[in-house]
Amino acid sequence: MNFLEIQFSLRGKTLPADHGYALYSAVKQRLQESKDESLPSDLPAEVHLCSIPGVPDRAGLIYLNRGSRFRLRCPSEQMQTWYRFLQNQVFDIRGHLIRLVQPRITLPEASKTLASRMVTFKLDAIDHVELPRYFLESCQKGLERLEVSGQAFIPSDVNGDLARRTLQIRDKKIVGYSVVIEGLNQSDSLKLQWHGLGGRQHFGCGWFYPMEEANVS
Image (tube, rainbow, N blue to C red; front, side):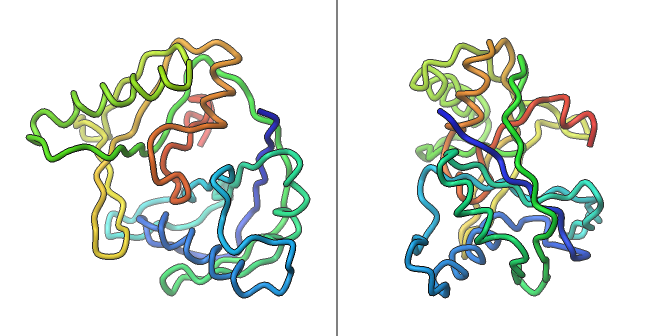
């Protein structure tokens, strides 16, 4: 579980608020266009992407600011590969251009409480009224599979409603929720940040970070 996080500052102005799949697709396209035979043609399962934060305009866009970062987690031995590949890359995210600059490498930090902007699970068709309960049961089962001890809950959004999220993948809309996990010890906190929770992790889902990070940003 030796992994590092690479963070890039961004040159650009705006992005679609729902850009997880488009960001992954842009990275994959650059990999397939590369003539470096040491690079894979797609992101390996052990490499995770985070969606890029920004200031929402409530009309489907976010404005990038100094806190906006492109973030990737990878095994320590792959750090040089992704650092070199991503530095100064320009990505077209559904017509919005961003350039990755000023990379920095960080170690993961353990925290008793971790949060994820969006977690998704492949759930059977169920009554939407019951969806939060089934979703939280899936969270707890996921933690058990990882042998992580912690309590999952769905926080509220700024309007006081459950923080429900959606992710557009081609013509399909995926529903998920923000998730907070409490009561983690140091080992379990790092394990959860490495493995994530749920699916669509190449699209920014299941990416956990210390709650202090959210409070700062």
